[in-house]
Image (cartoon, rainbow, N blue to C red; front, side, top):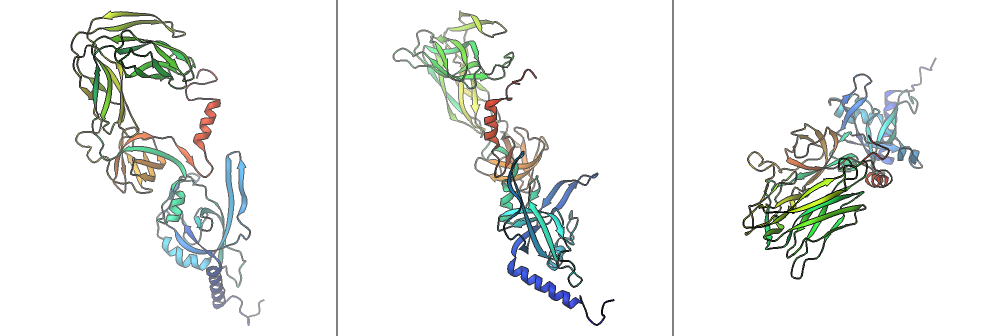
Length: 496
């Protein structure tokens, strides 16, 4: 039986010890930020956390119990790549947590435990500028001095981000998580969207390349080959063009790119006979073509006056009517199915009027950058009008597209697909939007709206997901791997 005349654990003694501990922590500790986890969605069967959020951070003094650096295995090379396995042990005051943090979080929704630190909460450690996750809370060490415990020992591991939402309004913390995890980049249409592009045609009086006829598509092209035309006579202009390569041509049986067409950038002028065409480079071989010329007025080339804006896909190009007499060549082509090598290229004189045709290209910002001729036409006696198709977001009802600024961590929603995501970074110049925690797939051309900011923009392009961390080099690794085995076009081990 204990001696009743000696007290061992009175409230005054316990209060003195707690005060001394609090003072020591304030003197020899560091100020960390404690972030309680909010459980937004959990699995109803095994209680697995599907979605959680950290939107509060509370400064709290803590003593670093690691005297010679981080614990754990450190930085290691594993079968999953380079991993950080750093551990950290912190000691915090029991009284400070219960009188400071508990009252602030006890009435918050989705906080499951407020009376003590809990496993799964986060600690921002400013000395290393890193975030740690609490893995175990030891509340009985030291062991009941004066019949009471005074501290919590937090055993922490380096936090591994898994699409949690962090928005604490503490810049040091939010900037750490800003570029972490799986990031998707959306290219958007900015202010001033929805204007139609304009262009001007330039004529040649006689001797332009009207059309290029592919007689052999060749094979194994990994990039478009260079196209060269024989020189025009003295005083004329030599034609120029670019090759269009199809990497998924039906019946290629695993052999990559074939030259599908030649797009004319300048039809030349002054030819008295059809020039020859040659192909070089591109990694393949065998491509061949012939040309036909027009002896009367043709469209020589087209210049862009204004690229417009708001285009989701390359717009149609309508080159105005023709007039006068002209002649042109047509081609009746037969081919052998197995090799797809063309033969019997029978060119015959055609006395019908021939209207010029062309195709356009756009950049990622939705601006028309060029118009190429697929047929320069023949018989033009005056400069034809170039009519370019309008972008899809002109007209009424779209005046509010391309306005506002997205907020960090706000939810955006696709108005067509219903896809949602969280904003990581917003760049107004461009504009571009980096997002994470994507639930679904955004559609090309759909309008996205910010839940908090009300910003509205239209998607013009999407990038693939990239894992962003200090060691990942996904794009370069993927590129180098594709040089060994490339699954992007065909199955190298046989038909699917």
